[in-house]
Length: 182
Image 1 (tube, one colour):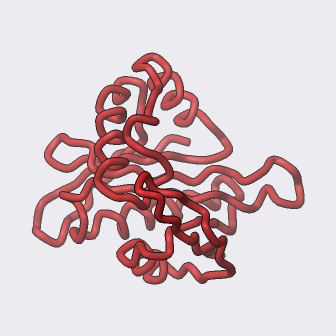
Image 2 (image 1 turned 90 degrees about the vertical axis):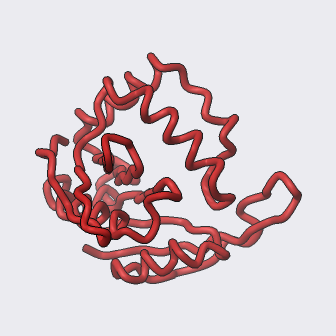
């Protein structure tokens, strides 16, 4: 799904631009992924587990951009990719095709500037065009910053998955499951 580039204002007065990621963003996206995965233990993988080649990432981004089952947006601040948010249809089966899986990540330097909130709001505004009326996510229980964002956006918890993630040091984290009806 295509989105015309949008400018948002950050809490510090700077501008940030929100748009679809495209194949030409692949190198920047791989750097972003490895950076974000290394800045917090709350992401789904370790930096070394980001193993797509430049060509594979470009093909992935182009496929996501033309998909009718979801949308992926990037936040660009000072010409740097600092955030990605996406919603993907949970299933194509009729009984569950109204549900989507939501994910967001921001580089640490972009935390607290309002990017996550505005990026999510723009993303959610596109969901009716995809006939997605409910989005769901999982968040590591100690990730208070993310939980605060999700609650601000209207997400509500519906359960906890114990021991959902095992960190390199052996610590295990529970995952809080949340949903938002749009």
